[in-house]
Length: 286
Image (cartoon, rainbow, N blue to C red; front, side):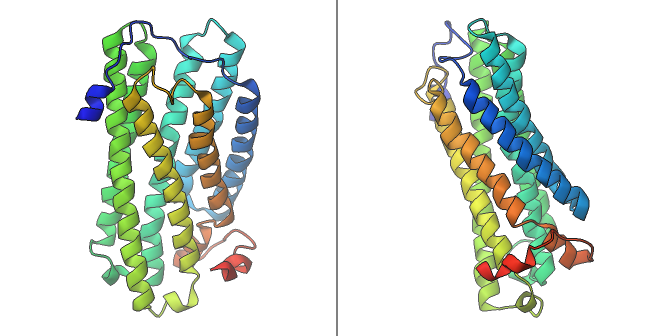
């Protein structure tokens, strides 16, 4: 509650940016996200790993977001609402889409190794619990971003949008912390009590991949919480460098990790079919 109250800053002099957006950074990350997203599309459709559809859409959102920042640069100093709204919302909610696929992958790893008994909650509820929380967080952040972006002439609307975004981010942080705890407990139990299936499958690579991805998204969300708690005139939101260090780079790493340790191997182990070529040769890493 204290964070929400602190987010209500003086917004009477609202401006879209406290700096001139960098066109070079926007182009570089738009291209990098486009390349990774294109590879994910090839991998996902080629192997029919359907639960990665939200992840793929999240990559598209990242591309659109940085293209939007490039358009904002071209409009300087008289920014229009459209591109600003697009880049704000796309970059804000994309990690929630990444999270949805990450949550679904853990349930599939559990099924792959036959480890249902090692979870302290039912596997079916595992997916429902975390994905439903992720959807709620997504809706809160997108609606808050819409209010904040379109209500720039109304300080109370902007403040309300900030608070909704902040609440959505806090919810996302809580769910990610719980998710990592659930995954770690399952991991520890499975190492102590290996199943017949787990002895023949590189499940640990995928667990460590989930830890890495989850940590990156978690850190990003924590920084975003601090950003919106500081308000629209806070230090983080008024310095563009933080967006790239704590949002663009971590999310690009998330996509890169999932490109390399692709979940198609889990899907192939469950129901047969294709997996990303060469992924088995890398399993000796773990």
